[in-house]
Length: 151
Image (cartoon, rainbow, N blue to C red; front, side, top):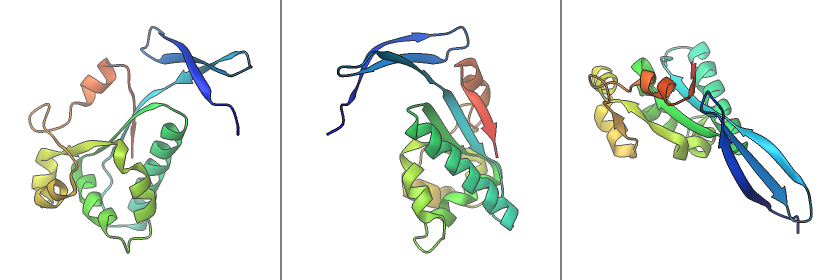
């Protein structure tokens, strides 16, 4: 059985990034940069290129989560329609969606209503974000030290 990593201490740099120091039993400490990342999907559901955008967004979320980063996944604008699409077990990206579902911070409440998916999103258990005029506050994420990637 491989030794598990033990968190020894964390520090924060001036940009709010977390630096964590881990040590495996019997090994020296190593420093790991823990990134604060917000991934926002605005892409519509209408084209193959849009599918590529949401798949790439989910891959970034999965990679960040696997690396131990603090990751937030948000659907905004026409991107709120993706939740209903990806909830479909027959969708080819459903398994990838399931693998990142726990990292979804929410979907824009205003946009979900505007694009006709408010009830569907609510039924999935995804939070409806209304921090700033019924929209998620991307500014707050930046102020909290998150790098924001938009797809």
